[in-house]
Image (cartoon, rainbow, N blue to C red):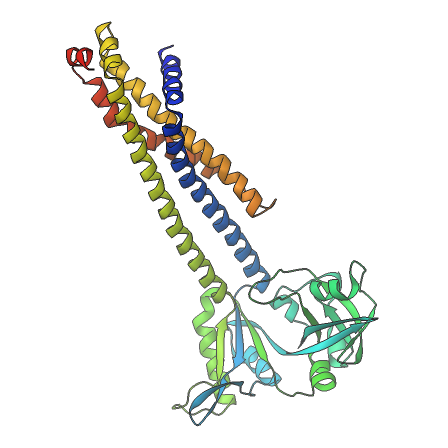
Amino acid sequence: MLFFENIRIAFHNLRSNPLRSFLILIGMAVGIGAVLHVVVLGKMTQQRIDKRLQQMGANVLLIRPGVSRRHGVRTAESTVNLKWKEADELLEHSAALSHAVPVYSGNGGLVYGNKNWSSQITGTTVDYQFVNNDFPVEGRFFNQDELDQRRRVSVIGSTVHKELFGERSPIGETIFIKSKRFTVIGLLKAKGESWTNPDNQVFIPLTTAQERLFGAAHLSSILAKMRSSEDFEEALFDIETVLRRSHRLSEDKKNDFRVRRQDFFLQAVQETNQDLADFIIVIALVSLVVGGIGIANVMLISVTERVREIGIRRAIGAKKHAILTQFLTESVILGILGGLLGITGGMAFNHFYIGEEALILWDWVGYSFAICAGIGVVAGLYPAFRAANRNVIDSLRYE
């Protein structure tokens, strides 16, 4: 019964100073709301990055030509030095690699009926789908026979599908790529945008791309898939050995090609995002500390204003622990109410700002309540002890 009586008294005292109580609650709410918002954004970003990493293909190395130089000055142009046979040599000479897929990419216009669209045209081999996780959700990928015979078949990304066909199935339809007729045999699952749009692509056999569409004998890149992530150093050594020998580079010359892990960029983004989220959480926690200081200040003022009340309660038999519990209860209620306001406001803001896909992290909701209650306890301890230890006679004489 004493517990509920303390709660009733606490709410009565908070209502007696509504503006002061409201300002303290706002300070606590802003801190908690900011923490929840940052945590939700960080979690959603983490999920997007994890999904993108899975879609990109695990343990994949991207081998690209090096940049050209004129009179020792680096230009924006790439050298033309990667060949299809080098992809085969990599796979033959490296035990660390399970696949080595040649790729040639170029931009081109697409036409279907009266619709036009510009897309990236990627010529590759059958193994590309296994290396980069590009499996059709409708239809199929081209096969080895179509690759050998330079067939005009294509597998399109979801953006191309939307722009040319809308909601219609593209399978079996004819499109024109750089004014040449191609049959659509597959539709890829949407991957979503990152720093580029992987869905705005059309995949065709590499033989068709090089000989019938672009007239190129070189490659844009080679995708080399490692057997495991622990094989990175061995795979890198093998790639450098094979390509330097193929390009006839002497020991004093630098590599004229570049090797990058596909997931390094996203991992860097992930780490930067986490660092930024941690920094913002620290700032938000500082605002919570400020809110706790505000609660302590309010409680000290409350003790000063209610000196005679404290003296009367002590004079009629109230123990010190009863006085301490009363003021500590008020402080904790302030903290919990601020947390409740912040949680409600944070979730509402997330729903408005992010949309229906906004996550509700119930563990952090629980943490928020615990943090606010803890701040209420810490902020209320000194004022509560001060109230409980006031001299009864002095309190009764206080004006």
